[in-house]
Image (cartoon, rainbow, N blue to C red):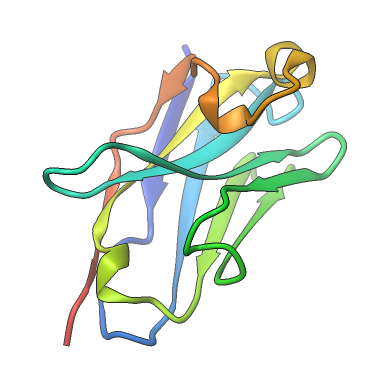
Length: 130
């Protein structure tokens, strides 16, 4: 069974930083591309970033997070990270990681954030407030 577990969320002041982790079990990062999404109360879920570890491909949504958030992975730890800098109150949300099979990821010619994901984590809360 594939499981994704997010961690690293918390309360941070505006301008601060956090690093989220997505630990994957039951599969390897060679089998799945991993993306980050977030959802704030009353808002639609928003795709943020995607990483394909075998080829190092990274994708970022055209949004306010571009340039402030960086996705990376560690194959040895089977974990994907998202470094978030210059956090703003508008970044407050529950952050989720999700996995999609590499063959599906490689077959798409559109945004990988629009794919149907096979597995989701339970989410980690990020609150940006003074």
